Length: 416
Image (tube, rainbow, N blue to C red):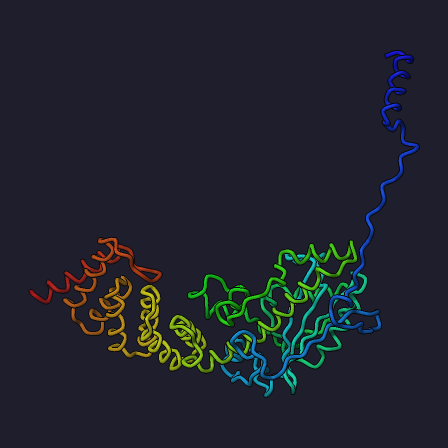
C-alpha cells in the first residue's frame, strides 16, 4: 500500500470517529476497593498482644441452652469415655479444664503454606458455655492471633476436636513453630470425637462427617447463612483482595456451629457410653458400643449389650454379625452351651461361620460326630446353594469338604 492510500485510509477512519494511536486514550479506571471492616459485620473487638492486635468475637450461651434436641451444657458421667479415649483428665468435675477447638484455614490439604485465619474455642463456665473466635485481618497478624489464643488456652489441659488429630492440631503446631511462638498443646490430653463417632455409627450412618451427625444425632440443620467448607479459603482470599468482610459472616457462623456441635456430641457420646440403654437411638448403636466394651476388656458390659442389641429389630446382616461376635465372646468365657445357642441363631440366618463353629463344637466338645457332620453339611449346602452368608474369614468350600470327609470317617469308625 503506498503512502497516499494509507493517509487516505487514516483520514477516513478519523472521520468515522476511530481513535488512531494511543496518545489520547485514557487509562481504564481501577476498580474501587469497597471496604467493609470486620467490626461492622461481626460483633467483637481488637485484642492486644506483644505482636500486635487480633480480632475476637465473644458469645455466651446459658446453661440450659439446647443445641438441636440435645443439651449443650450438662453434667455427664465421663468414666467410660475417659477409659475408651485414654483421657482421664476429662473426669474432672464440671469439665472446666476442657476446651473445644476448631479452625478455618487457607486450604484444606494442610502443609506449611496453609494457615488458620479463624480459630474458634468453646468451654464450660459456671453460667453456661462461652464461645470465642480469633480472627486475623491478614497474614501479618498471625503471630498476634496465636499469642491471643495462648492467653486463653493456658487455663485448660484437655483439648477436644473433630478430626483435629489429623488436621487442626498438626497445622497449629506448625504455625506456632514458624512464628517462633511457643505451642500451647505440650502436655495436653487430646480427644478426637471423629474417631469415636466412627466406632459408634460406622454401621448405621452413611457418613460420620459433622453435618451428617448434626442431622441424624443432634437433629439440627444449618441455615442458608452457612458456608460449605470447600468455599471458605477462597472467600477469605477474596476478603484480603477486596476488603469486603460481608461474606465472612457465613464463615463465623460455620465455625460457631462446628464448636457448638462438637461440644454437644462430646456430651452425648459420654452419656451414650455411660448409659447406652437409655441413650442409644438404635439397636445397631448398642451393638457398636458392645464391640467397644469388648475391645476395652469390659466383657460383662459387652455381653449384656450384645444380648440387648439382638433383642432389637436389627437388619439381618447386623443381627448375624452381632450374634457371631457375642457367641465368640461367650466361647472365650468358656460358656460353651450359650455359645452354641447363639451359633444356632446365626446358622438359621445363613451364616457359614456359625455352621462351622457348631461343627467344631459337636466334634471336639460333645464328641457328637453325627451332629457335627450335620452342621458341616449345612455349611456346604449354603455355599452350594449360593445363599448370601455373613461374616468375614469364611471357610472355603474345599475346607468344608475336607471337614465333611474327616467327619464321615469318624462316623463310619464308630459304626464299625
